[in-house]
Length: 294
Image (cartoon, rainbow, N blue to C red; front, top):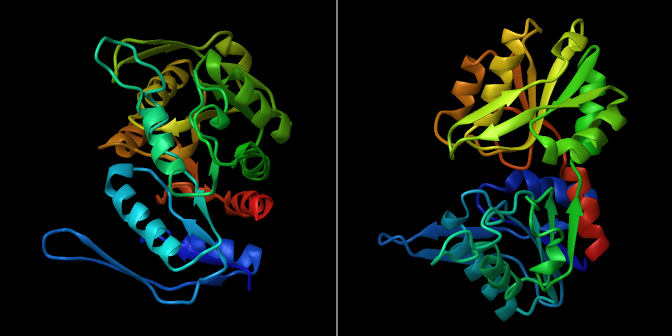
C-alpha cells in the first residue's frame, strides 16, 4: 500500500476515519513521556517509500507541536516519501498582524514552522481574517475543507423551521452558505466587542423571527461570549431558546457551561476538536482533502 495513517495521541478516531475512507493501513505508534517530560516515540510499522498521513488536530498547539515535529523527523529518517498533515483545527491563526509595537505575527511564524517539516496539509475552516488564503503564509500545498455542507445537512435534518443567526457582519458570507444549503432564512447580529471577554449584540427585526427556531451559528466557540450575548438577546426578545452550532469546539474554561446557562437549548459542534457536543461529521471531507493531495 502506498500510504499509511498515523494517529498523533488523541486523534485515533480521525485516523480510523481516514483509514476507512482512503483504504489506508494504520501504522501503530508508540508514544510516551520520560520522567522529565521529554517525548519517546517509535513507529511500529515499515513506512519507507510510502506517503505518511498524520492525523493531528492543533487545538492547544503548544502541547503538541514538539511531538509532532519529532514524529515528522522520525518519519523522514525512516524514508517516507511525503508527509501529509490532516489537521481538523489549525491553531495560531489569530495573530495575523502586528497590532502594537513590539508584537510579532505568530500566524506567519507558525506557518513557517509547520511548512518546514510537512509536505502538505488539510484543514477545516481555518480562521482567515486579514490573511485571506493559507497559501499566503504556508509554503506547502493545502486543502481547506468547508464545514458548511455538513452543517447545512445536519440543520436541515434535525431542526424544524430554522432561522440562522450569524454573530457579526463578517460572518454573513459564511452563514449565508449554511443557510442556502439548509434552505432556510438567515439574519446577522450587529456586534460590538468591548474587550476579550465582553460583547454587546443586537438583532434587527427580531419580531420577524417569531414562530421559527433560532439557530446561532459561528465558526469558533472559544470564550463563547458572542454566543452567550446572542443567546440572552434572543431569549429576551421572546423567541424560543436557541440552538447554538459551531465548527470548532474550543470552549475555554467554563465557556460550555456558561453557554448552556445563558439559555441555549442545545449546543452542537463539528468533530474538529473532540468534545461531547460533536454531532456533525466533517471527517469524510477531510479524507477527500487528503485524497486530493495524494
